[in-house]
Each structure stands twice: as structure tokens, then as C-alpha cells.
Image (cartoon, one colour):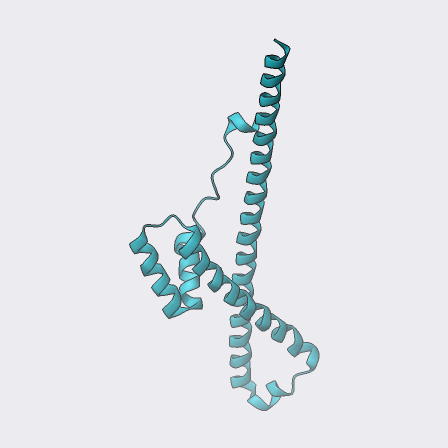
Length: 151
């Protein structure tokens, strides 16, 4: 009788342990996807800001003359250059991340995946922005852990 009780207790403890592991893995996965989404948001903001800064410098350069723009002090050119570098790295990682998401992670039908992958490959970072706003941004995070497991 005690062997049967011991076996049922150990099975119950194993179930509890595996449920806790499943819950912690789900939380880690959810945090990972939240971090990725936050990174993509920051990358897009840096990209837009660098484009705006370059447009502003181009407009100002057209008004005052190109010679004055090229002789701006280093302290003024440094933030614009860093913003451009971070924007370029961010938009490249966004593009690669959207290709990965479309090909591997998303639950889109096969034909839809092919169309999105063609768009991503042919239009590169522009396709990445389109995919981000049309598919990735509005998609919910991974399925939550059921209340029975987290209880």
C-alpha cells in the first residue's frame, strides 16, 4: 500500500514540477517576444529619425549652401552620424527578422508566405516595414499558459 501511495505522490510531484517548468518557459518565451517587438519598435524609430535628420540637413544645406553644411562642427555631426548608423543596423535587423518571422515563425498559409517572402526579398527594408505593419505588429504574442497549469 505504501509503495502505491509513494508512486502516486511522486507522479503528482513530477506533474507539478513539469507544469512549473512549462509555465516558466512560457513566461521566458513571452518576455523574449516582448523584447524583440520592443527592439523592432526602437529600430523603426531610429530609422525614421535618421531619414528625417538627413532630409532636414539636405533642406538646410540647400538653403544655406553645401559648403556650410560640410563645415559643421563635429559635435553636431556626431549625433546625426550615430543615428544614421543605428538606423541602418536597426532596419537591416528588422528586415532579417521579418524574413525569419515569415519563413519560420508565422502561421500564415504557404501561398501567403511565398508572396510575403517575395515582397521581403525584392523590396528589402521597405518590404520589412510593410510586413511589420501589416502582419507582425498586430499579431498576438504566443499562446498564454492555460489557467489550469498556472494555478
